[in-house]
Length: 217
Image 1 (tube, rainbow, N blue to C red):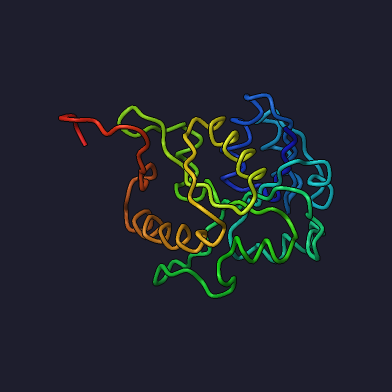
Image 2: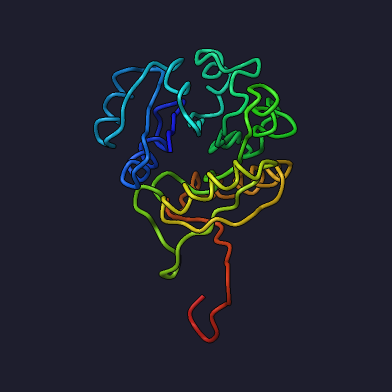
């Protein structure tokens, strides 16, 4: 799979090496070429200008702080439906850290805003834990983490679920893209927890399969 990152932040640094290790071709484009190059070298990925790295990608990953979303989309040249036919995974959380509320800049959700802006088949996924969780392949009670995947596209869901598995987690169908509103709001609770002293590996952990009986929670 060809994967293009828009942004060279902590989520890019955490996810890119997992996906190159799984055999995917990863290209990283960031605002700062030096930072993108450093991450690419550590991850075994390639680096490209922000407005070029996404062009041959099957899956584009937007990996920037919400404050930089508009700038990044414009600098990459992906507004106006430029990503039509591509899958765009939104790993971002539009949550301010004063009152820990979802910001009103992107309505009804950031993921739905991206779909309307870029034309891509957008997926909300991999946003509900801190980047450290992915870089360490953290587990919960010895079991893989469960990742909600919300999208309107069956193709986008299938590709994203594969990438979730390649990151060491288990995907779960969270429904259509409108559920991104709920996933972003859920994450506000985790972000508040992290900002007020919670451990970086904290997560809402969904379960799949049969629940354990008589074991530790």
